[in-house]
Length: 77
Image 1 (cartoon, rainbow, N blue to C red):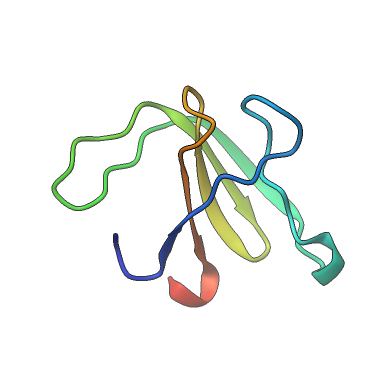
Image 2 (tube, rainbow, N blue to C red):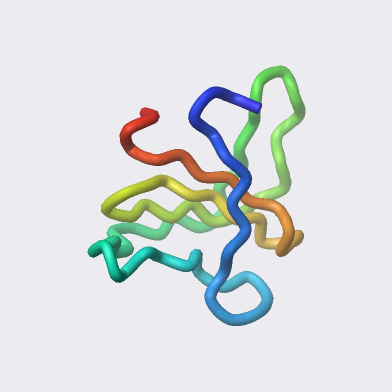
């Protein structure tokens, strides 16, 4: 896995919901970009998902596989 990148699959509700945010620490959703594919290293691009930009992190969640997602904190960017 890429340095700073972590697996992230916590979603609100069931299915392809939005990511769970740390609202107790002031995290807010800033932008949502649908139909985004990510490619890590030399691997083939993942199936399209949704990119979520919050006040603390960038998270990508697969639209097809609820157990697949990645996030990186802004301190790691």
